Length: 123
Figure 1: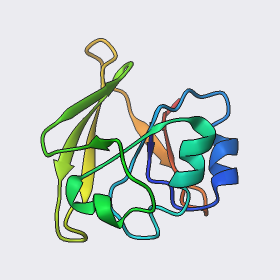
Figure 2 (figure 1 turned 135 degrees about the vertical axis):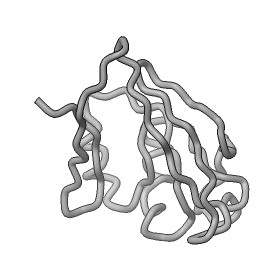
Figure 3 (figure 1 turned 90 degrees about the horizontal axis):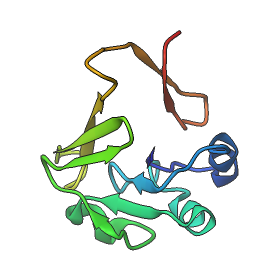
Figure 4 (figure 1 turned 90 degrees about the vertical axis):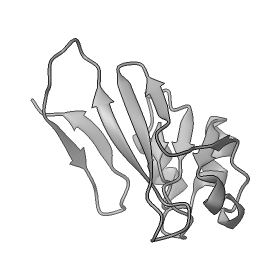
């Protein structure tokens, strides 16, 4: 799962090698979040989700409409969708749960200069 697709689809695709991305969730409809979803969607054949209030402002039509309080799970990761209007009418945040037994472990966000970030466990 990928949150936002700011730009440089080639770089995002390079960083997604050896993954099995199935979704792009768009957190808001401003251009700094949606530079590459059309290319990623067609290349990876993945579904796009966002809040209904931002859907008409995207460069493509999302297949999934995310609402406040919904939960979406991917293997050992579960996200709670938080509708946080203000920045845009349909702005979203995602609260992430890692379901690895009952243990908690620290994570960090790798955020290179191009703005494409990845969560990974700290060693």
